[in-house]
Length: 407
Image (cartoon, rainbow, N blue to C red; front, side):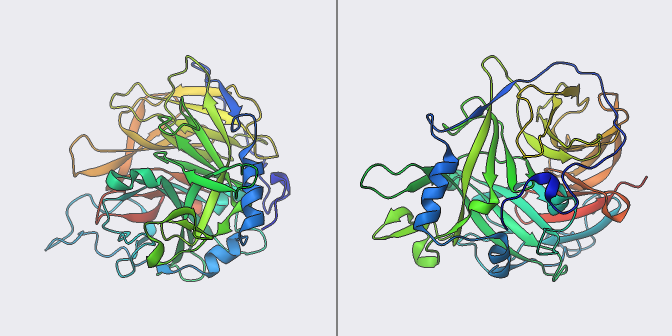
């Protein structure tokens, strides 16, 4: 795809609707960041001159993995599915491949080295299918754990149009591009973030960075990647433990493609807001917005909203609205007209997660149904009467699924 203003994309980013404002509890301030005075976008351009470029069509058409059916939700045990494992109002879903290892040798469904977290869709990005491709596409973020923590984070593009039962998908490693010094080649490093939530905004993927673990976002905030900047590197099993430029080639732990960091938003000094999850809201009037929310073990967490410009950047560094979540252990949050929906872990380990609703946002939350065990991020779409995409993170209990709102 070529870069385009968001308002010009299919369906447009700007989607008229009736606005439903909620009281602002406080404001969260962020600043747009660059790499030591020089933009990561410039460094990405250096990589694109050195490596074959890869657009989204190529990413999808060369996908090496096939999803599988969700099964009986019994997760490998005998007898009937345990109570509460099937989400209420379940519509569709798939499980990760169990037959083909990921580029670095890990099994997607059962690895303890990568954990899926965020989910977003082409509805977020463009109001429908991907322009020029006509496909419904999901993106899921994963963070590296244990000995893979230093490998950073990755995203997975899933085509749910051509074969919904066994959708093909492709992993892409996130990298931080670095300016080439005089006489040297451009290079990159890993992006070590939790990637707990994600929002597709035109050509941008906004990914939550709650802790600022990596040096690019010290105080927590959002890391933003431009999907028109993806490049192809040397992949395959022989490259599983190789990274960066070596012996005349570029490597990324066996992955075929990398997605470079484009820009960041970082909390200003004094802010302790946790950017644990992200979602895109198209239902608040003519301006779309990013919603960021906090994971806290108490019910005192908050969500905040930033309006977006047509360019896809946050229009102003100061949040336009905030509200209290009123429930604990929130893993995903979406705003839909005057309401908010949350996915939350159960208080009992191993029990089904819960979907909560607030009407209006900030009011007392009520349980709206069961979700999978270990629910994570949420993404809203107007399709199928209004529905939510969600996913589970636990080993051998990993599914991506869509549920109806039932209203």
